[in-house]
Image (cartoon, rainbow, N blue to C red; front, top):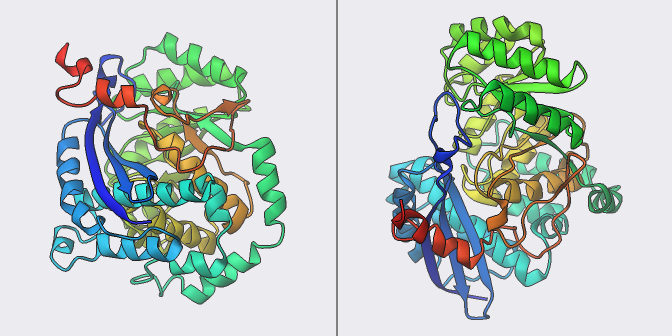
Length: 429
C-alpha cells in the first residue's frame, strides 16, 4: 500500500463566539485543525490532523505541505513502515534545524504520522487501540526513536515492561470493550462562563456520571475563589475538582495562588508555569504537596517528558495526541510514564483530541500500564458532531471506538463548511 497523494486543509471552528475553550492565557480560541488526507494506490485513505486555536493554523498547513514530499511514495503496510516514515519526517538533516523536534514542524509531522497510523489501522479493519494492542512487544519497541532516552529507559527495559503486561491482556481488551475508560470533563470550567453556568454544568456533569471535573483559573484570584467555592458547593466533597492555569504564573506566584485555593480541595494544578520549566514544576510540586501537579499538553517531545519524570516534577502526565510527532513518539512517552510509575491522563481539550487520545489510553491499559488507577481522559462536549466516528460517553466513561482507524476523519460537509477562509461559515462572518 503506497501513498500517492496528500491533501491538506485549513479547518477552523468559531468557538470564540461562545467562549468555549476560554482560559487565562487563551481567552478567545477558535478551535482549528490542520487536516490531512493520505491517498493510496489501494484506494484506502488515512486521515489525521494537528490541533491549533486559530491564527497560525495556516502556518501548520504550510509545514505539512513541505513535509508531504517525504510521505508520497512511502509504503504503509505495517509497523516497520510506520517507524521508517516517522524517522523520515523528523530527521531530515536541514528541516530538523527548525526544531529540532519541536514547534510547527513537529506539529506538522504529527498530522502526517497520525494519518499514516489511521491508514494502517483502517487497512487492518481495526480501531487503532486494538491495532496497537495486537502488536508484539518487539514491534512496539521498534516503532520508537530511542535517541536521547537510554539514560532513563532502554529498549531492553521497555521490552521487559511490555512483556510484563502481556498476561491478562485479552481480559483487559474485553473489559475496555465492555466498560470503556473513565473520563473527566472540562466543559463546566471555561473561564469565560459566568458562575451560574459553571454551577449548572458542574451539577449536570455529576448527574452524568463524572467523578472529576476541571476549572480554569489564573486571571483573577478572587474570581477563582468565588467560582471554585460555587463549584465545590454544587458537587460536594466526593467529586475531584482539578484546576488548570494554562501556564499563567511564575513559580512563586503559582504556589501562592494555589495555596489560596487549597481550602476547596483541588485535585491537581495543571500547567502552573511554563511547560519548558522542568525545575519550576519540580519546585511547585514540592511546595504544594499534597496538591498534585499535572502537565504535558504543551510539552513538545519525549525528551522533555523524560526530564519531567527524572526530576520528579509531575504527578500526572498529560500527553497530547498531536503536540508531539504522533503515535510513535507517544508510544515512547507511555513507556517512560510506566517506567516512572506516573499515571497518564491525556489532554483532550480541542477539536478531535477526544477522538484520538482515547485510543492511546486504552492501549496503555491493555498493553503498557495494565491499570486504570488514578487515570482519566479529559472530555469536552463540543465539535464531536463533525466526525464520522465521534466519541461516545456513557456514565462518565469513554466507550471503546469500534470503527477501523484512529477516529480522525471529519465529515465532508464539515470540511467544506469550516474551511478557512473561503468556507461558508467564514464567508458569512
